[in-house]
Structures are given as structure tokens and as C-alpha cells.
Image: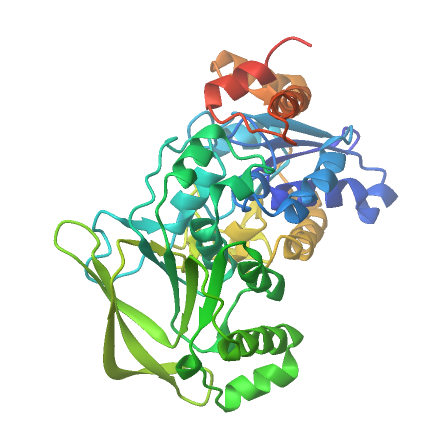
Length: 455
């Protein structure tokens, strides 16, 4: 191939950006003298995906990952094009005309459902909706009323811990973050005194990381309460303690919290293990949550005991996992929320690889693992893509400018990398005006207008 290999990546989160980085570094392509030209497309005007819109605002350490992603997007072989929505502005055929290969890195953007009575009552929410709100996602309504004084969070992973922490946290403690004014007002108006987190399995089966867990106990005015009667360790749990430092640390932290004396803080964050939610109670809106006490079965699983407990709560947030969304013109596994694939090679309905079409990140493997895990995942996809390159159908319009012409013909107000840097500088200036590090621009139109302004 005398011209650069053209690759289009749908999704500008870590998975897509890491895939682009690996393509620019691939030794096989370099040895063959094959340069690459990569476009990363995203439906939002800004890059970074869940690093920008899925990480709690009081986690600046994780948000520092943006610095590493910024360096990748600065590479001359990579072009960022935001405000381009796959399935709306263009379809798979369009991409195949302009790229030799296409990688889908669209992530997981919706909540997994929980099929119990009352789950659809007003006051029952998916965690993704709440997270997108407090992270000022431009496609989410600006107002959120945090109901009640006592709320329930269902889940045993980092998202559940994040949601619980934000619900318990004093809004003023977030003023040194990049939250927008509407989020600050919404959190400041909340009257929550008790947050109950419910995990179906035991203390050794929690999916949260030790760092996330410990942060629960570092909030001024908030007391973490763990119940000794919820502690149980079966053979599988004991084995997990020996095999995993993360499990060992989590259990030790929880045990220390369970035996310490109460501090008598104004707010309480209750951690309940071996409780399976079975019904959201209420007639016209959430009035409580009913759980069944569970017991470990020796192999790390649980079974019901037939003992039920009711908790008075006025809101329920379920954080039991995310799912990806279907991508136009591609098969989709509704149960797992992923695009069917084999090592990143997207499969058709007959389970045959679709030439030149790939997946990486959560849309490839489901929402498992931390952000750093997407690097290894992307490596598998890129390795297979490079191995397949002689079997691609070459793009009929590979010139980079021809793709921009297509977007302009369709009236797409796309944003660019230079535009994002203007938007980023504007957010920094908003922060300076308010004596803060940064303040996000929330409205999509405003983001696009700033990004498309002339330099």
C-alpha cells in the first residue's frame, strides 16, 4: 500500500484513543513501510468519553488520565472529529468508502435493568443517568432533584461506591472540582442523611477497589457503618483472600469499620452485605426497599434464606452494571450489551468475521475492568487488524479531505482537535473567574460554538 492505511475509530474514549496510539506504534506496519492516517469520531463535541463523563468529579487523580490521552490525540497521524454521530450522520457504508478499516469503541452507556416489582416507580433511577448528570453530560437534562433523607444504592462496584459518596457528600466539598453551577445547586439542595448500599453477595465478593472503598470514610461529617451480622466467609471467600491482595485489603478495611466505636456524625453511609433487593416499595413513588437476607453456599455464590427486611428509603439508585448500545448495521448481543466479535474481529450473524470491521473496549468485552485494562484489550484488536490488512477492501475515497467534504455536505457541524483545545482553554478561564481549577461547559450548542470559533 503506497498511501497511508486509513482507519476510522468510532468513539473517542480511552479505548478508541489507545487503539489509535497502538496503530501509530505498530512495528509490523513500520517494518513494511506502511504509514497510518486515523480519524477518531465521537458523537460528543469533546473527546475522552467516560474519563470526562463517567468519573466522579472528586477523582482528579483518575481525570489526570486525560493528560496521557491528550498527548496521543496531539499526534500528527491522528485527527479528532467530534459532534459526528454514527448511525445518524453516517452509516457503515459511508465509513467503508473512506476507511480501509473501522474500529468501534463506543463503550457502555446505559444501565443494566433490574427486574423486580416497583423498579419503575418515580424516585427509582439508573446510576448512569445520575453519573451523567453530575458529570454534566451535554445530552442530559440540567436539573436533578435528589429525593428524600434516606436513599438506597444497589450494587457492589466502584460505580455504586461513587454514587453513594456523591449522595452523602456536602456540595461545598466539591467546589474545588469542575462541577457546573446546576450540579452544585442540585447537590446543595439535597437533604440526605442516610445512604444505604446493598450488595447481594458477601464482603469478599465486592468489586470495588480498595482506594474507592477507603474514600467513603474520608468525607467530613459522614460516618461509614458496617454491620457485623453481614460478615461471613465461606471456603471460596477464604480462598479469594489468599489469592487476591485487593480482596484481602477490602475485607480488612470493612472488618475494621465494623468493630470501631460510632462517631455520631450527622450523616451515615450504611454498607449492607448479603442483601438481595426483591422489591421497591411504594404506590405512587418510592417509599422503601425490601431485601432478602442471603447466605453463602461455599463456592462464592449465595442463596436466599427466606428472611426479608424492609428499609424506609425515598429513592433507589441501581448500579448493577452498564450495557453498550446497538450500532447501526452491525449485529448486537442484547444480553451482554456488546458487538459480537472474536478477538476484536466483528462477527456477522453467521459468526464470520466482517472484513475490515473491529471492536475494542467495553463494546467488545462488556464493562469489566478499569480504564487501564483497555490498553491490553486494544492491543489484541490492533494485532488482529494489522494481521488482516492484506484482506481489506481498500477505501474508494481514502483522501482525508474527502471525508470532511462528506460531513459538510450533510450539514454536520463537526468539531476538531484545535476546537477542543479552544473549549478546554475556555473552561480553564471559567474556573479562573470563579477561583477554581476548571468549570465545564455543559450545553452542547455552546460547546460546539466555542470549538468551531475561528482561532
